[in-house]
Amino acid sequence: DKQPEPVWVLMGEILSTTDQKAIECDIEWYINKNYRKKNVTHFNPALGLFKIILPLRQEYEIVPVKKGYLTITDYVDLTNENSYREIKRNFYLLPLEVGNKGVLNSFTFLQGKADLPESALKDLDRIAQAMRDIPTLEILFEGHTDNQGDFQLNLQLSEERVKNAKKYLISQGIQAERIQIKGWGQTRPIANNATEERRKLNRRVEFTIIKK
Image (tube, rainbow, N blue to C red; front, side):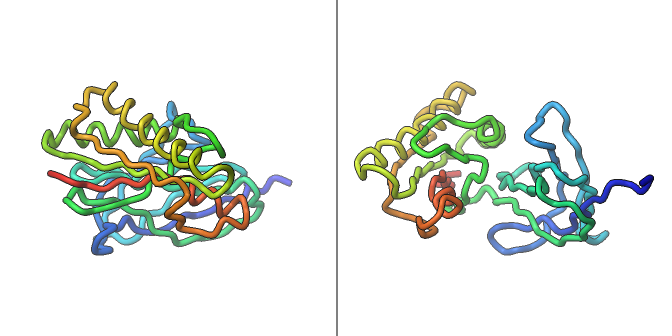
């Protein structure tokens, strides 16, 4: 009864989305999106895999950070785990080069809603900082929905989602002409819409570097 609580040992690398090469960087991680409590570790490929000890029954946000790259935020959900495990999993950074494209995993919209979640605002803050660092950088945001509901309403909803992203970046001092947007509605799914878990994947925002 005095044994320590079980944990997960998360191990892995931070890789470039374009060539899969390991990138030395900091890794920020947060418990249940509690952004006031930031944990930081450093990944150096020359020293091997990073290791993070994660207590169970929490959800964690994993955020690799490096200047010249855009963060691809990802999540580790241990809310239903109850036993010790060692897990190898890689995370990603996207180089700020023209044509590079990624999905903003933090844009987890509720069905039928366009409100930006707090986690999305943190990613947009990072994008705004990258656009301040590189004053010529321009980005295209593309919104997508699942297939539930009316086709035209879904098209409008996808546009509202990326409009909200653009409005937020403008509020952070980024010029409107540097941000392009396009809503695709339900026309470009990346998963079938058979279950709610699969539909969540289609309710997404993608970004592409269009100018640097």
